Amino acid sequence: MKKQHIDLNGKTILVTGSPGFIGANLVLRLLREMTCGKVISFDSMNDYYDPKLKEYRLSLIEEAAKASSVDHVFIHGNLADKALIDGVFADHKPAVVVNLAAQAGVRYSIEHPDVYIESNLVGFFNILEACRHYPVEHLVYASSSSVYGGNKKVPFSVDDKVDNPVSLYAATKKSNELLAHSYSKLYNIPSTGLRFFTVYGPAGRPDMFYFSATQKLSRGDTIQIFNYGNCKRDFTYIDDIVEGVYRVMTGAPEKSVGEDGLPLPPYAVYNIGGGTPENLLDYISTLQEELVRAEVLPDDYDFEGHRELVGMQPGDVPVTYADSEALERDYGFTPKIGIREGLRAFAEWYKEYYKE
Image (cartoon, rainbow, N blue to C red; front, side, top):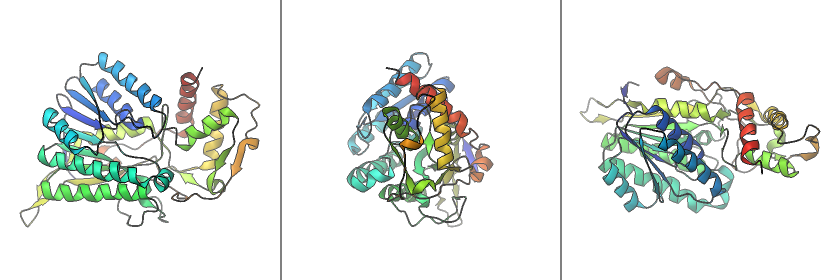
């Protein structure tokens, strides 16, 4: 698909979910790369996980903003508040919108379905409506590898059928793609969805396995390894994710007209994953080695005594595996950072952050 180049300098960019894991790292990248313009951060700062971690990331953003030539504004609010979202667009008129705010987590969606409807559906609808009434050059939004559900064909391609989600979380992300497509068609809004594959790294989400396992091991607790370790995940380091998002932001699907004289939807979806799924047990072994190296855990730690192999959990899938050929073709990028390098960076950050 042809792309319309967007120069981010001098533009107003709205990033929702900015104190979140991906959002914070993206805003930091924008503050470094842009020479002028404005970045608006937006988030509800909810307590899905320890708010102190979001406050920590936000503090990094605020510190970086002091040294940046780019203006930065943080807006505390709920994506489901339509009047607030409309007001943000009316006041700031963002040229590029990156919607990363969402209720994440597969297992959490089983116990708390209502928050997924509010944030992932109502909230995303409010973003689309605002983009409709205050036209933007490009809407980029987070989807998820969870949309592939129990697909047996690997690697997962954006051309695969994804009509059978196995969790409410996955269903909301697929719904985002469908809603974005309809708004792209009806209102000629350039939009790009990104299916992220198991993002990890320093200051990540504590509900992700590598983080929660580290916390449990450091307390002397036992970690549960699902599906008896017979899982493979396409782990993607945060710097690779941010590089992919940044490149996509600068290349919007080009607007065009069909034979009927109506706009063809300027719409695209991409995978962002390394394309090298790792066996879960190998990943855990690498994590343990790096935790010992960083002195988070002692050399003689009894790892076998703190492992419990258990069955598959509802909503989980045995394999995730990204085909990122389209991302390479259209943006010249494929994630490349391996788990050893990524987990080493996480372990060193963890040691420093929790040094008390």
